[in-house]
Image (cartoon, rainbow, N blue to C red):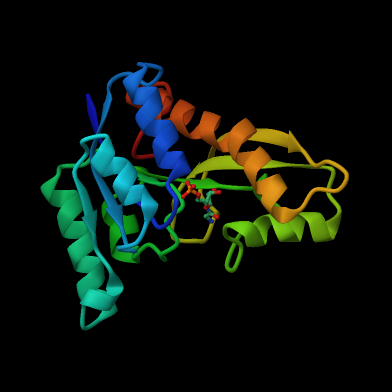
Length: 201
Ligand code: GAR
């Protein structure tokens, strides 16, 4: 059974998808040990609480320096003896110290088909705004390992989603979540938990 930490910043619909798939046993051999948010107001924390999962807020605002915040974040992961860190809408730059220590054990969901619409500045709704501005007909979501770059690590799963006439960023975001993110993120965790995708690569 692998121990999973899920890091969140906002609504936590991806967290909810993971919780639901663990509950209905679509994900096996994995338990969510802790949910961590940088944002005290994140609805994701309530989702964790309602599911009876340990949840903690670690906000950079509560620390005198970024370094102290980074150390606090890593200390929680170490204390929980986490095997896998899942970034599910975690909008904080991951400290390089953490990337090194947890190399090959951190995965991220990004709401586009990497390498399109990714990298610095591309997060949340901005990704879908950029996709619509460019006029792409197909977008999607990607689960990838996290390395030192932004959205540059090895890709684990991708799923394409159709862009429809008249889409707004909000409508497209919802379709990408429903048709891609909420499926491939739990699927990637299940593949890792069952040794089909190797950790530490
Ligand atoms: C998701 O769409 C996720 O892909 C995106 O933030 C949203 C979080 O929603 N992440 C990024 O843009 C990372 N670059 P959620 O809190 O409802 O899961």
